[in-house]
Image (tube, rainbow, N blue to C red):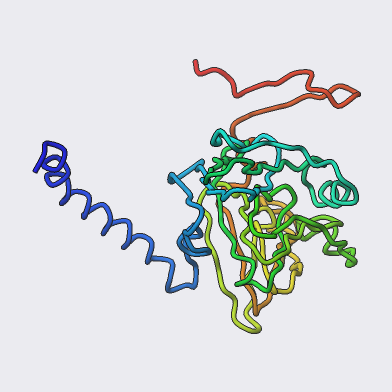
Length: 284
């Protein structure tokens, strides 16, 4: 037994305690039907892995000739044989824009003769949630801009919302982002992310900004019951609702709320260029 083995053996009891504590903490919400959303919950770890607890890295293995699609700015590292190409093709670019993504989609293709890899990370402070689309009817509705990357045929798109009340008050706008296909999609979410499976007829009432994505469930709106609550609850005059059967993914710290509490102010000029960026006040 070498020195490294001895060190590992000495640390083993502490590690076991940490694992048991984490496991017990993860069980607390299960009685209410909420599960911590992550790699182990939503897709198998075959050709990809999510590394880290927060602000994670998605590592994807690419066989020769295989490619990965991702939003711009997400590539952290890649093997030598992988080539990056930008996709401006229409109507795909228009559909992505309407769904809240950038018009350009990056393709990372393994052009070499041996297995390669790509590392992807969100361009903002966020966690990565893996969604196996085959498990959720090959279609998931997501918050605008939530799409990060996908493999094996999953692709971002959009669909119009025809209900004026939902357009204005449900938090997903007039055009919803959808991710469709048979592969695995990876979306961004901030804070702690949980998955809730809704039974038939079960209704979940949500803060509109906390809903990241949903599948199969019926999106709705519920008015705040009193004017006092409407004025002082901090969530506005409407809640978002989801009625089962279906699945919902929720986040504890939406990106817009995070920026607000950090005091970040970005001013744009008339052409849309960044003119001034202000941070939180300095501590006295």
